Image 1 (cartoon, rainbow, N blue to C red):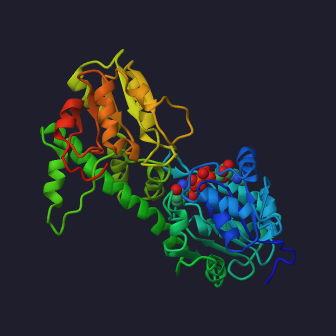
Image 2 (cartoon, rainbow, N blue to C red; image 1 turned 90 degrees about the vertical axis):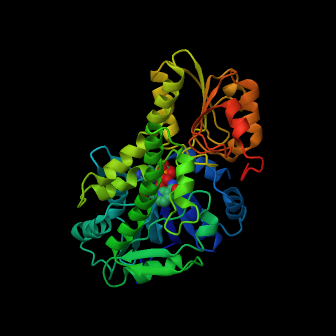
Image 3 (cartoon, rainbow, N blue to C red; image 1 turned 45 degrees about the vertical axis):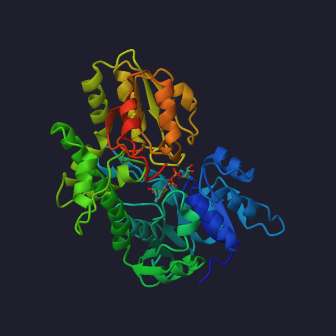
Length: 431
Ligand SMILES: NC(=O)c1ccc[n+]([C@@H]2O[C@H](COP(=O)([O-])OP(=O)(O)OC[C@H]3O[C@@H](n4cnc5c(N)ncnc54)[C@H](O)[C@@H]3O)[C@@H](O)[C@H]2O)c1
Protein backbone atom coordinates (compact mmCIF):
# COMPACT_ATOMS: atom_id res chain seq x y z
CA UNK A 1 0.00 0.00 0.00
CA UNK A 2 1.15 3.56 -0.58
CA UNK A 3 0.03 7.02 0.37
CA UNK A 4 0.44 7.84 -3.31
CA UNK A 5 2.30 11.15 -2.87
CA UNK A 6 5.27 10.41 -0.60
CA UNK A 7 8.25 12.63 -1.24
CA UNK A 8 10.19 11.34 1.76
CA UNK A 9 10.82 8.01 3.46
CA UNK A 10 10.67 9.07 7.10
CA UNK A 11 9.40 12.07 9.05
CA UNK A 12 10.72 12.67 12.55
CA UNK A 13 8.48 14.92 14.66
CA UNK A 14 10.38 16.55 17.54
CA UNK A 15 14.08 17.24 16.84
CA UNK A 16 15.23 16.98 20.46
CA UNK A 17 17.96 14.84 21.97
CA UNK A 18 16.25 11.73 20.64
CA UNK A 19 14.70 12.98 17.41
CA UNK A 20 17.57 14.94 15.88
CA UNK A 21 20.24 12.20 16.06
CA UNK A 22 17.63 9.73 14.76
CA UNK A 23 16.61 11.96 11.83
CA UNK A 24 20.27 12.58 10.93
CA UNK A 25 21.07 8.89 11.20
CA UNK A 26 18.24 7.92 8.86
CA UNK A 27 19.45 10.56 6.39
CA UNK A 28 23.02 9.31 6.76
CA UNK A 29 21.84 5.81 5.80
CA UNK A 30 20.39 7.15 2.57
CA UNK A 31 16.74 7.67 3.53
CA UNK A 32 15.01 10.92 2.65
CA UNK A 33 13.92 12.57 5.89
CA UNK A 34 11.59 15.39 6.92
CA UNK A 35 12.61 16.78 10.30
CA UNK A 36 9.86 18.65 12.14
CA UNK A 37 10.02 20.84 15.21
CA UNK A 38 7.82 23.72 16.34
CA UNK A 39 10.80 25.52 17.87
CA UNK A 40 12.15 27.92 15.21
CA UNK A 41 15.40 28.41 17.15
CA UNK A 42 16.10 24.68 17.04
CA UNK A 43 15.30 24.48 13.33
CA UNK A 44 17.48 27.54 12.69
CA UNK A 45 20.44 25.90 14.44
CA UNK A 46 20.07 22.71 12.38
CA UNK A 47 19.71 24.73 9.17
CA UNK A 48 22.89 26.63 10.10
CA UNK A 49 24.68 23.35 10.66
CA UNK A 50 25.07 23.79 14.42
CA UNK A 51 24.24 20.87 16.70
CA UNK A 52 21.99 22.42 19.39
CA UNK A 53 23.26 20.08 22.14
CA UNK A 54 26.19 17.76 22.79
CA UNK A 55 25.99 14.28 21.33
CA UNK A 56 29.15 12.32 20.63
CA UNK A 57 29.80 12.47 16.87
CA UNK A 58 26.60 14.51 16.39
CA UNK A 59 28.23 17.59 14.86
CA UNK A 60 30.16 15.48 12.33
CA UNK A 61 26.96 13.64 11.45
CA UNK A 62 25.09 16.92 10.93
CA UNK A 63 27.97 18.24 8.81
CA UNK A 64 27.85 15.10 6.68
CA UNK A 65 24.10 15.25 6.17
CA UNK A 66 23.78 18.93 5.29
CA UNK A 67 26.99 19.21 3.27
CA UNK A 68 25.48 17.14 0.50
CA UNK A 69 23.41 19.76 -1.37
CA UNK A 70 23.39 17.71 -4.57
CA UNK A 71 21.39 15.00 -2.77
CA UNK A 72 19.48 16.72 0.00
CA UNK A 73 18.42 14.01 2.40
CA UNK A 74 17.01 16.21 5.16
CA UNK A 75 14.33 18.86 4.83
CA UNK A 76 12.99 20.81 7.79
CA UNK A 77 9.56 22.13 8.71
CA UNK A 78 7.72 23.70 11.63
CA UNK A 79 4.42 22.11 10.58
CA UNK A 80 3.57 18.69 11.98
CA UNK A 81 1.18 18.10 9.05
CA UNK A 82 4.21 18.12 6.72
CA UNK A 83 5.12 14.77 8.21
CA UNK A 84 2.50 13.24 5.93
CA UNK A 85 4.97 13.72 3.06
CA UNK A 86 6.72 10.65 4.42
CA UNK A 87 5.35 7.12 4.55
CA UNK A 88 6.75 6.49 8.04
CA UNK A 89 6.14 9.13 10.73
CA UNK A 90 8.16 8.84 13.93
CA UNK A 91 7.06 10.83 16.99
CA UNK A 92 9.99 11.79 19.25
CA UNK A 93 8.14 14.35 21.34
CA UNK A 94 8.63 14.94 25.05
CA UNK A 95 6.45 12.96 27.46
CA UNK A 96 6.84 14.43 30.94
CA UNK A 97 4.68 13.36 33.85
CA UNK A 98 2.15 15.53 35.63
CA UNK A 99 2.55 15.93 39.39
CA UNK A 100 -0.71 13.94 39.42
CA UNK A 101 1.38 10.76 38.83
CA UNK A 102 0.15 10.53 35.28
CA UNK A 103 1.78 10.79 31.88
CA UNK A 104 1.52 14.24 30.30
CA UNK A 105 0.92 13.43 26.65
CA UNK A 106 -0.23 16.83 25.52
CA UNK A 107 2.54 17.08 22.89
CA UNK A 108 1.64 13.64 21.51
CA UNK A 109 -2.10 14.53 21.46
CA UNK A 110 -1.38 17.83 19.74
CA UNK A 111 0.74 16.14 17.04
CA UNK A 112 -1.92 13.44 16.58
CA UNK A 113 -4.57 16.10 16.02
CA UNK A 114 -2.33 17.89 13.52
CA UNK A 115 -1.84 14.61 11.64
CA UNK A 116 -5.39 13.32 11.81
CA UNK A 117 -6.64 15.04 8.65
CA UNK A 118 -3.57 14.27 6.52
CA UNK A 119 -2.99 10.59 7.27
CA UNK A 120 -3.81 8.22 4.46
CA UNK A 121 -3.67 4.47 3.89
CA UNK A 122 -0.03 3.35 3.76
CA UNK A 123 1.15 5.70 6.51
CA UNK A 124 2.85 4.39 9.66
CA UNK A 125 2.86 6.22 12.96
CA UNK A 126 5.66 5.19 15.30
CA UNK A 127 5.88 6.26 18.94
CA UNK A 128 9.59 6.55 19.75
CA UNK A 129 8.85 8.61 22.88
CA UNK A 130 8.65 6.85 26.23
CA UNK A 131 4.98 6.30 27.05
CA UNK A 132 2.76 4.85 29.75
CA UNK A 133 1.45 1.30 29.18
CA UNK A 134 -1.59 1.39 26.90
CA UNK A 135 -0.63 4.59 25.04
CA UNK A 136 0.15 2.87 21.72
CA UNK A 137 -3.24 1.15 21.72
CA UNK A 138 -4.81 4.51 22.59
CA UNK A 139 -3.12 6.14 19.57
CA UNK A 140 -4.29 3.30 17.31
CA UNK A 141 -7.81 3.56 18.73
CA UNK A 142 -7.81 7.35 18.23
CA UNK A 143 -6.96 6.97 14.52
CA UNK A 144 -9.53 4.20 14.10
CA UNK A 145 -12.20 6.19 15.92
CA UNK A 146 -11.69 9.49 14.10
CA UNK A 147 -10.67 8.26 10.64
CA UNK A 148 -12.04 4.74 10.49
CA UNK A 149 -8.64 3.23 9.60
CA UNK A 150 -8.07 -0.49 10.08
CA UNK A 151 -4.86 -0.37 12.12
CA UNK A 152 -2.30 -2.91 10.98
CA UNK A 153 -3.96 -3.21 7.57
CA UNK A 154 -4.27 0.22 5.99
CA UNK A 155 -2.48 2.40 8.56
CA UNK A 156 0.28 1.09 10.83
CA UNK A 157 0.94 2.02 14.47
CA UNK A 158 3.79 0.81 16.64
CA UNK A 159 5.87 1.62 19.68
CA UNK A 160 9.61 1.44 19.07
CA UNK A 161 11.05 2.88 22.29
CA UNK A 162 14.28 4.85 22.32
CA UNK A 163 16.65 3.03 24.67
CA UNK A 164 19.91 4.74 23.75
CA UNK A 165 21.82 6.67 26.41
CA UNK A 166 22.74 10.28 25.72
CA UNK A 167 26.24 10.50 24.27
CA UNK A 168 26.12 6.96 22.89
CA UNK A 169 23.55 7.40 20.13
CA UNK A 170 25.76 6.71 17.15
CA UNK A 171 27.26 3.61 18.69
CA UNK A 172 24.06 2.14 20.15
CA UNK A 173 21.73 2.77 17.19
CA UNK A 174 23.50 -0.10 15.44
CA UNK A 175 23.91 -2.39 18.43
CA UNK A 176 21.00 -2.16 20.89
CA UNK A 177 18.17 -4.51 19.93
CA UNK A 178 15.37 -2.38 18.49
CA UNK A 179 12.09 -3.34 20.16
CA UNK A 180 9.02 -2.97 17.94
CA UNK A 181 5.52 -3.44 19.35
CA UNK A 182 3.09 -3.19 16.43
CA UNK A 183 -0.69 -2.93 16.60
CA UNK A 184 -2.71 -5.33 14.45
CA UNK A 185 -1.58 -7.69 11.72
CA UNK A 186 1.23 -5.90 9.88
CA UNK A 187 2.37 -2.83 11.85
CA UNK A 188 5.36 -4.59 13.43
CA UNK A 189 6.60 -5.89 10.08
CA UNK A 190 6.23 -2.52 8.28
CA UNK A 191 7.91 -0.52 11.06
CA UNK A 192 10.62 -3.18 11.50
CA UNK A 193 11.53 -2.67 7.81
CA UNK A 194 12.23 1.02 8.44
CA UNK A 195 14.53 0.30 11.40
CA UNK A 196 16.30 -2.20 9.16
CA UNK A 197 18.20 0.90 7.97
CA UNK A 198 20.37 0.24 11.04
CA UNK A 199 22.43 -2.82 11.93
CA UNK A 200 20.70 -3.58 15.25
CA UNK A 201 18.49 -6.66 15.50
CA UNK A 202 14.74 -6.00 15.46
CA UNK A 203 12.77 -7.67 18.26
CA UNK A 204 9.05 -7.92 17.58
CA UNK A 205 6.61 -7.90 20.49
CA UNK A 206 3.24 -6.50 21.50
CA UNK A 207 2.77 -2.74 22.04
CA UNK A 208 2.22 -3.01 25.79
CA UNK A 209 5.27 -5.25 26.23
CA UNK A 210 7.38 -2.73 24.35
CA UNK A 211 6.05 0.04 26.61
CA UNK A 212 6.68 -1.97 29.78
CA UNK A 213 10.18 -3.03 28.69
CA UNK A 214 11.21 0.58 28.15
CA UNK A 215 9.86 2.07 31.34
CA UNK A 216 10.95 -0.87 33.50
CA UNK A 217 14.51 -0.64 32.19
CA UNK A 218 14.52 2.91 33.58
CA UNK A 219 12.72 1.87 36.78
CA UNK A 220 15.42 -0.76 37.32
CA UNK A 221 18.14 1.89 37.12
CA UNK A 222 16.20 4.35 39.26
CA UNK A 223 15.64 1.76 42.02
CA UNK A 224 19.20 0.43 41.70
CA UNK A 225 20.60 3.88 42.47
CA UNK A 226 18.11 4.52 45.29
CA UNK A 227 19.60 1.63 47.31
CA UNK A 228 23.14 3.06 47.71
CA UNK A 229 21.60 6.50 48.26
CA UNK A 230 19.49 5.14 51.12
CA UNK A 231 22.51 3.25 52.43
CA UNK A 232 24.49 6.51 52.37
CA UNK A 233 21.83 8.13 54.58
CA UNK A 234 21.75 5.13 56.94
CA UNK A 235 25.54 5.15 57.21
CA UNK A 236 25.48 8.78 58.31
CA UNK A 237 23.01 7.80 61.03
CA UNK A 238 25.27 4.96 62.24
CA UNK A 239 28.56 6.88 61.76
CA UNK A 240 29.56 4.28 59.19
CA UNK A 241 31.40 4.85 55.93
CA UNK A 242 29.15 4.09 52.96
CA UNK A 243 32.04 3.40 50.61
CA UNK A 244 33.52 0.86 53.00
CA UNK A 245 30.14 -0.84 53.44
CA UNK A 246 29.68 -0.98 49.66
CA UNK A 247 33.12 -2.50 49.31
CA UNK A 248 32.24 -5.09 51.96
CA UNK A 249 29.03 -5.95 50.09
CA UNK A 250 30.65 -6.27 46.68
CA UNK A 251 34.16 -7.55 47.34
CA UNK A 252 34.56 -11.08 45.97
CA UNK A 253 30.91 -11.75 46.69
CA UNK A 254 29.07 -13.40 43.82
CA UNK A 255 25.70 -11.97 44.87
CA UNK A 256 26.94 -8.42 45.50
CA UNK A 257 26.77 -5.63 42.96
CA UNK A 258 25.30 -2.64 44.77
CA UNK A 259 25.91 0.63 42.87
CA UNK A 260 27.58 3.77 44.21
CA UNK A 261 25.65 6.74 45.64
CA UNK A 262 25.13 9.94 43.69
CA UNK A 263 22.59 12.39 42.32
CA UNK A 264 20.01 10.23 40.53
CA UNK A 265 17.72 12.20 38.26
CA UNK A 266 17.52 13.49 34.69
CA UNK A 267 14.64 13.87 32.37
CA UNK A 268 13.99 10.13 31.93
CA UNK A 269 14.66 8.50 35.30
CA UNK A 270 12.81 11.16 37.27
CA UNK A 271 9.52 10.69 35.49
CA UNK A 272 9.34 7.28 33.83
CA UNK A 273 8.54 5.48 37.09
CA UNK A 274 5.35 7.59 37.30
CA UNK A 275 4.10 5.90 34.12
CA UNK A 276 4.06 2.61 36.01
CA UNK A 277 2.88 4.19 39.24
CA UNK A 278 -0.23 5.47 37.38
CA UNK A 279 -1.86 2.10 37.96
CA UNK A 280 0.57 0.08 40.02
CA UNK A 281 -0.25 -3.15 41.83
CA UNK A 282 1.93 -1.90 44.68
CA UNK A 283 1.14 1.81 44.79
CA UNK A 284 3.77 3.77 46.65
CA UNK A 285 6.72 1.44 46.19
CA UNK A 286 8.23 3.43 43.35
CA UNK A 287 7.21 6.70 44.95
CA UNK A 288 9.39 5.69 47.90
CA UNK A 289 12.26 5.03 45.48
CA UNK A 290 11.70 8.49 44.04
CA UNK A 291 11.62 10.06 47.50
CA UNK A 292 14.99 8.53 48.38
CA UNK A 293 16.66 9.87 45.23
CA UNK A 294 14.94 13.23 45.54
CA UNK A 295 16.06 13.69 49.15
CA UNK A 296 19.81 13.30 48.41
CA UNK A 297 20.40 17.08 47.97
CA UNK A 298 18.70 17.83 51.30
CA UNK A 299 20.60 15.00 53.01
CA UNK A 300 23.92 16.44 51.80
CA UNK A 301 22.98 19.98 52.75
CA UNK A 302 21.94 18.89 56.24
CA UNK A 303 25.17 16.90 56.58
CA UNK A 304 27.14 20.07 55.85
CA UNK A 305 25.03 22.04 58.32
CA UNK A 306 25.57 19.42 61.02
CA UNK A 307 29.34 19.83 60.61
CA UNK A 308 29.54 23.60 60.09
CA UNK A 309 26.43 25.11 61.60
CA UNK A 310 24.41 27.63 59.63
CA UNK A 311 25.34 28.10 55.98
CA UNK A 312 23.92 31.61 55.92
CA UNK A 313 26.32 34.15 54.36
CA UNK A 314 28.95 31.47 53.75
CA UNK A 315 30.36 30.95 50.28
CA UNK A 316 29.29 27.56 48.90
CA UNK A 317 30.55 26.22 45.58
CA UNK A 318 28.43 23.79 43.59
CA UNK A 319 30.38 21.86 40.95
CA UNK A 320 28.16 20.51 38.19
CA UNK A 321 24.72 21.49 36.94
CA UNK A 322 24.17 18.62 34.50
CA UNK A 323 22.18 15.60 35.61
CA UNK A 324 25.04 13.20 34.95
CA UNK A 325 28.71 13.08 34.09
CA UNK A 326 30.03 14.68 30.92
CA UNK A 327 26.69 15.77 29.48
CA UNK A 328 25.33 19.26 28.83
CA UNK A 329 21.80 18.09 29.71
CA UNK A 330 20.66 19.77 32.91
CA UNK A 331 16.97 18.98 32.59
CA UNK A 332 15.59 17.65 35.88
CA UNK A 333 19.04 17.74 37.45
CA UNK A 334 19.13 17.50 41.24
CA UNK A 335 21.92 20.04 41.21
CA UNK A 336 19.32 22.72 40.58
CA UNK A 337 17.37 21.44 43.57
CA UNK A 338 20.52 21.58 45.73
CA UNK A 339 21.12 25.19 44.66
CA UNK A 340 17.52 26.16 45.47
CA UNK A 341 17.85 24.55 48.90
CA UNK A 342 21.18 26.30 49.56
CA UNK A 343 19.68 29.65 48.57
CA UNK A 344 16.91 29.03 51.07
CA UNK A 345 19.67 28.67 53.70
CA UNK A 346 20.87 32.15 52.64
CA UNK A 347 24.20 30.71 51.49
CA UNK A 348 26.23 32.60 48.87
CA UNK A 349 26.21 30.05 46.07
CA UNK A 350 28.73 29.97 43.20
CA UNK A 351 28.23 27.41 40.44
CA UNK A 352 30.60 25.96 37.88
CA UNK A 353 29.86 23.47 35.11
CA UNK A 354 32.13 23.12 32.07
CA UNK A 355 29.44 21.51 29.87
CA UNK A 356 26.03 23.15 30.21
CA UNK A 357 24.61 26.08 28.24
CA UNK A 358 23.53 27.95 31.39
CA UNK A 359 26.22 30.51 32.20
CA UNK A 360 28.31 29.57 35.26
CA UNK A 361 31.50 31.04 36.73
CA UNK A 362 34.95 29.53 36.05
CA UNK A 363 36.09 26.70 38.34
CA UNK A 364 38.72 28.81 40.13
CA UNK A 365 36.24 31.59 40.78
CA UNK A 366 33.61 29.17 42.12
CA UNK A 367 35.92 27.57 44.67
CA UNK A 368 37.84 30.74 45.62
CA UNK A 369 37.27 31.27 49.36
CA UNK A 370 34.49 28.65 49.48
CA UNK A 371 33.71 27.20 52.90
CA UNK A 372 31.83 24.26 51.38
CA UNK A 373 32.21 22.60 47.98
CA UNK A 374 29.46 20.26 46.77
CA UNK A 375 30.33 17.94 43.89
CA UNK A 376 26.91 17.68 42.29
CA UNK A 377 27.94 16.02 39.00
CA UNK A 378 30.87 13.66 38.52
CA UNK A 379 32.21 15.26 35.33
CA UNK A 380 35.62 13.96 34.23
CA UNK A 381 37.12 17.40 34.86
CA UNK A 382 36.22 17.20 38.55
CA UNK A 383 37.68 13.70 38.94
CA UNK A 384 41.11 14.97 37.97
CA UNK A 385 43.54 15.23 40.95
CA UNK A 386 44.25 18.80 39.85
CA UNK A 387 40.63 19.76 40.63
CA UNK A 388 41.12 18.68 44.24
CA UNK A 389 44.47 20.47 44.32
CA UNK A 390 42.77 23.67 43.11
CA UNK A 391 40.18 23.37 45.86
CA UNK A 392 42.83 22.97 48.56
CA UNK A 393 44.76 25.95 47.17
CA UNK A 394 41.89 28.35 46.65
CA UNK A 395 39.06 27.44 49.01
CA UNK A 396 38.90 28.48 52.68
CA UNK A 397 41.45 26.73 54.91
CA UNK A 398 38.95 24.38 56.52
CA UNK A 399 36.72 23.93 53.47
CA UNK A 400 34.28 21.04 53.73
CA UNK A 401 34.00 18.98 50.54
CA UNK A 402 30.76 17.07 50.00
CA UNK A 403 31.32 14.37 47.40
CA UNK A 404 28.79 11.53 47.17
CA UNK A 405 30.51 10.39 43.94
CA UNK A 406 33.85 9.62 45.55
CA UNK A 407 35.54 11.58 42.77
CA UNK A 408 39.05 11.30 44.20
CA UNK A 409 38.82 7.79 45.71
CA UNK A 410 39.20 9.19 49.21
CA UNK A 411 35.99 7.36 50.21
CA UNK A 412 34.37 10.18 52.20
CA UNK A 413 31.01 11.80 51.52
CA UNK A 414 31.85 14.66 53.90
CA UNK A 415 35.51 15.56 54.50
CA UNK A 416 37.72 18.60 54.82
CA UNK A 417 39.78 19.24 51.70
CA UNK A 418 43.06 18.61 53.51
CA UNK A 419 41.74 15.21 54.73
CA UNK A 420 40.77 14.26 51.18
CA UNK A 421 44.28 14.95 49.92
CA UNK A 422 45.73 12.79 52.70
CA UNK A 423 43.22 10.00 52.12
CA UNK A 424 43.60 9.80 48.34
CA UNK A 425 45.24 6.52 47.38
CA UNK A 426 48.71 6.92 45.93
CA UNK A 427 47.58 4.89 42.90
CA UNK A 428 44.18 6.40 42.20
CA UNK A 429 41.82 4.16 40.29
CA UNK A 430 40.83 7.07 38.09
CA UNK A 431 41.46 10.75 37.52
N1 LIG B 1 16.84 12.31 26.15
C1 LIG B 1 17.08 11.01 26.28
O1 LIG B 1 18.21 10.61 26.54
C2 LIG B 1 15.96 9.99 26.08
C3 LIG B 1 16.30 8.64 26.04
C4 LIG B 1 15.31 7.70 25.83
C5 LIG B 1 13.99 8.12 25.68
N2 LIG B 1 13.66 9.43 25.74
C6 LIG B 1 12.26 9.82 25.52
O2 LIG B 1 12.19 10.35 24.21
C7 LIG B 1 11.22 11.40 24.15
C8 LIG B 1 11.86 12.69 23.65
O3 LIG B 1 12.85 13.07 24.56
P1 LIG B 1 13.89 14.23 24.23
O4 LIG B 1 14.87 14.25 25.34
O5 LIG B 1 14.39 14.12 22.83
O6 LIG B 1 12.92 15.50 24.33
P2 LIG B 1 13.24 16.98 23.89
O7 LIG B 1 12.42 17.86 24.75
O8 LIG B 1 14.73 17.18 23.81
O9 LIG B 1 12.70 17.05 22.39
C9 LIG B 1 11.36 17.24 22.06
C10 LIG B 1 11.34 18.17 20.84
O10 LIG B 1 10.00 18.23 20.38
C11 LIG B 1 9.69 19.57 20.02
N3 LIG B 1 8.25 19.72 20.10
C12 LIG B 1 7.48 19.77 21.22
N4 LIG B 1 6.18 19.85 20.86
C13 LIG B 1 6.14 19.84 19.52
C14 LIG B 1 5.09 19.86 18.56
N5 LIG B 1 3.81 19.94 18.93
N6 LIG B 1 5.41 19.83 17.26
C15 LIG B 1 6.70 19.74 16.86
N7 LIG B 1 7.72 19.69 17.72
C16 LIG B 1 7.46 19.74 19.02
C17 LIG B 1 10.48 20.42 21.01
O11 LIG B 1 10.72 21.71 20.51
C18 LIG B 1 11.77 19.60 21.17
O12 LIG B 1 12.77 20.00 20.25
C19 LIG B 1 10.63 11.49 25.56
O13 LIG B 1 9.50 10.68 25.62
C20 LIG B 1 11.73 10.90 26.42
O14 LIG B 1 11.20 10.39 27.63
C21 LIG B 1 14.63 10.39 25.92
